[in-house]
Image (cartoon, rainbow, N blue to C red):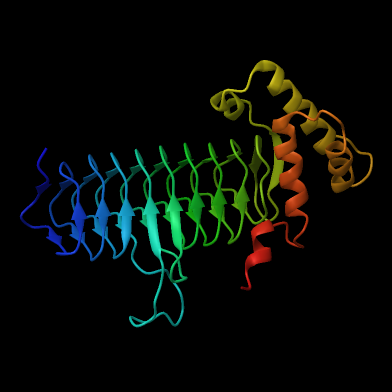
Length: 271
């Protein structure tokens, strides 16, 4: 199919658009952009320089994707990195996604994700696949969201936070430490782990037996009053034949404990 570009759109001559890309009215596509087949840019979408977008993505009106990150002292001469977006993502109105602040590196968004109205994704973040981020949630720089994460509306996330796979954050949560896989977190400063995320486990395709093992592990970690949480997790990690999903939970908690604020990725802040 032939590329469809509205007459009012501005496309840099170095941009590469696949054969059936659609570019709507008043869009701006900057230099060295690559857009894969089947991707649609609605009206007034802005794509910054050096952005790579895969196949069959839908970008709705007034998105700003790949413009420079919000950093003090960042001028037009400073070199920054890029932004890579995979396939089959839905990016709704007024979403902003920033490229890496480091030359040669990229902010990355995987496949089959949905970013709802007004979501902000800061520089150097990494999103895996099948993630839902609801309206006006704000993700600070250097965060990682693993597969299947679901953030409800207006969730605020501190820099360097990791969300484990198939976890859920309730609306208005303020997240300032890592969240293990398969749990529900809510509240703010500090947020609290509330329960297992049964719906997330079902979405992940876990069997009833696997879900029971995760639930049993959750009770040992968060409902047992014997010793400190890290002591309970360490003891659970030492058990023979530990279920692979439980292993991901305990490993995530142990990694988080390596930093005093409970944010494992913070270890790599200074480089």
